[in-house]
Length: 105
Length: 286
Image (cartoon, rainbow over all chains, first blue to last red; front, side, top):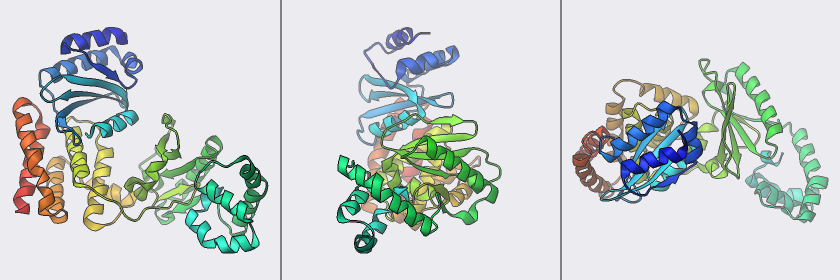
């Protein structure tokens, strides 16, 4: 699946605008098809509050969901507690650590 | 080559060097080079034409090797030799960078993977070639607790200068703990966070920076099925012993947040762990 199609599916699940961070397109297209489906299902679970959640230490109003794909890819979905989703980050582990620190997770 | 001279060393020997070996301008240029500051055109000429050859001669005369070894007594001899060869190869590839080889490979026969750390100004993609994993770290990492541990059993093309004091903030520690618990519950690879968490805890409680071997031994003790319970007890004990009660009041705020969140996110087992842990800490803190 191409990144464009993946993004459309994700936006349809969340029903809102969303920022795609990290090297999203490149990383998404490098995922296996099963992993792409897994990512989309995970987004659905996040929306339905079925996954584990962590809270930012920098801004207590922000929560996040994290998921690992393969050995080196990580996804972070961020959300305002009482509101909308902020961004979906998908990138290599190294950049994931920087992003996690940026959000205070 | 200037990697082998620390700023401290240079400042200490400055009067002698100025009297017998370098001019003031040369000494200033060398100082700038060690600080990794940009040299002017003139200074570059001085550096390559006069300073560098003199430094090379002094290092050769003093018997300084091309690699600095720390904790050699813990290393497997054959592996130290192999690491030296890799270091030489890496130096050709990353000419101006500070390079360090450390990790379990040096002291544990079971480990075949070799960790090479390259400290650079600019962010670069890590890569692996067969068993060699090259990790690019920012220069700022040289002042971290992780580096303080790493360099204790290592081979490097520079003289590692470790910081003596580190601060372990309550928020930072809780952040590390929460992430670690979340990774364990999600069955992800948690070894890196466990390593950082243990380093912080041991420094907080005993003011010691574990070397990679000590850290490996401690990490192994936590590798069992009851890891979550062990971590919980370990954290509670250290929170109560090392932070004043007033500071621990922060836990009440997080408890309140997590209780609200856990009503909404019923499947989030990590929240239950945090609630239990922080409740326990507050109970012991009195």
